[in-house]
Image (cartoon, rainbow, N blue to C red; front, side, top):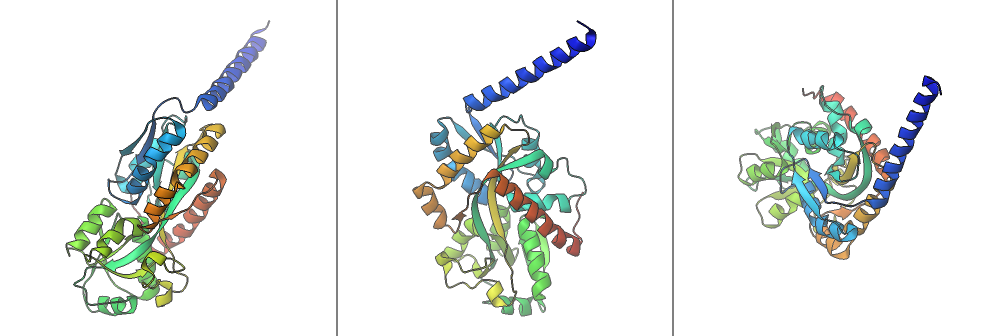
Length: 324
């Protein structure tokens, strides 16, 4: 046997072994604990979703499921961690998919490419943004807020520079003529806390994490960023109704895995996640907090991600927002 023939034979043997190992992994999966990485601090929308489904997902897969917070860099540290994890289906990312789609446009130096290094499994829930103000701000609707902002200094709290709530605020500011100063935080929880305390006066954030502060009277809601009104707060008009035609934004929680994760594993995970999030008690609980259960196939989620990336790239370019 010549060297070339031996080399070819060894290469083929290795390829067959790898294929066999992949098939075995897919067949046996899951055989150990799954880790859901949330790239934001505890208490935000993604964290709420992760902890809501962890037990149901564990029951569906018959394996332990743990939630691990890895905040930093507007979610990019945790996302990078998952993108470089072993593509075996045991380390998954639960985050705001829209925010993840914004990162490539905002950051000049990103240590991973979400479109190339991650792939979608399913969307889980959608929570529209609520436009809220501290109760001391003497306005009751968007028109009054715009007029007030032109005569008074207003601080607009954002979960992070370049985050989805930040760009939603930028889009609203440009469309309505409002004026405010953006104050960045390291997560939605601290942005909410400072607005409740009156250190910032305006906030746009996911309804899931923000509504409780509206219900207890610590924040005043002016509008919801959905095409139609939310039944839970049916008396609150949409932002589009208040003169910003076509305005819509929100927080989309979804699951992604490292690129290269076996297709059979992705499909099993998709099925288990959909079973978990659609459980009547979870769906009811989330609906009571302002989140709508939304599921997708892996392909549909990847297509959604591509559209969101293109959509927000235009906003980032127009606002000239860039971070290192």
